[in-house]
Length: 291
Figure 1 (cartoon, rainbow, N blue to C red):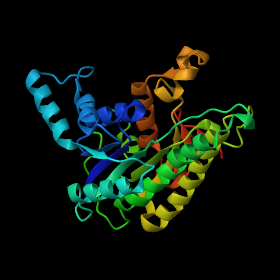
Figure 2 (cartoon, one colour):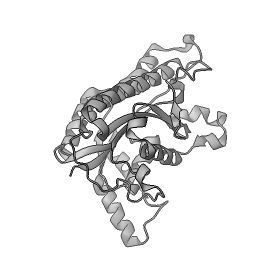
Figure 3 (cartoon, helix red, strand yellow):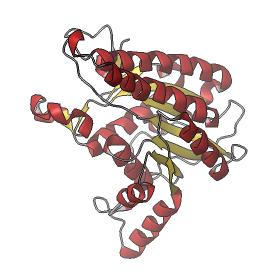
Figure 4 (cartoon, rainbow, N blue to C red):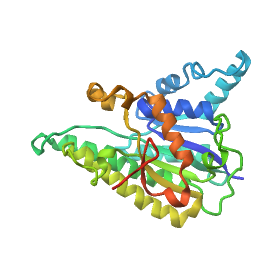
């Protein structure tokens, strides 16, 4: 039986950081996380007080759980604007989780930056180029170097649930056996929903993400059949550095903490049906965002 592992890229801050911590607490799978720099510092911050908000029943259990999390976490150096680092990280993942015995069960491609423009006159070429390199080419290169780790249709996936520590009243739909590749998108990437304009490069970069997700999923349909699929995802407005400038413009109930955003993200992943829902963009409520 092929054993699962998880990819989070990047995991140095924001949603990726909170997601890695959550996955270490709620799954038993190895987590392969990436950061551009200060790998030891990122690792320390991810493991710090990992069970403070949901401690195991006893000190002994807590120590055992903390040791397991530390053993399962691997931080690799990767910068999505430098393909050589992704090549090296992919080789590292191969060494740690050989495809002959392991498969990539969950992949979270989360790179993102925002240079807002209100009008065409605000567009800066260097900023625009960096936006597309990070938001669009970054996820595409992650697909290139890590997509082949997703299970082929012939792979026998280990039957144990990936989220044994997550209680749920409906186990069947919330614990799918197929693998999921999730790429961070945004509602403003929807051309159909574009009623306000502005944010030219960010909108275009995320619209491209949605197109790439569909194209990648078509590739997975052939290579993996129902064993793996790709989706794009809009987390809402999350209290991270990317949205800091807009916190005071968002109603309190619509400004999510990274921890809450991660819970919603995983709930959407767990409840997607491979044949009906693949290749599309979903929001934190589980509603589809049209292209």
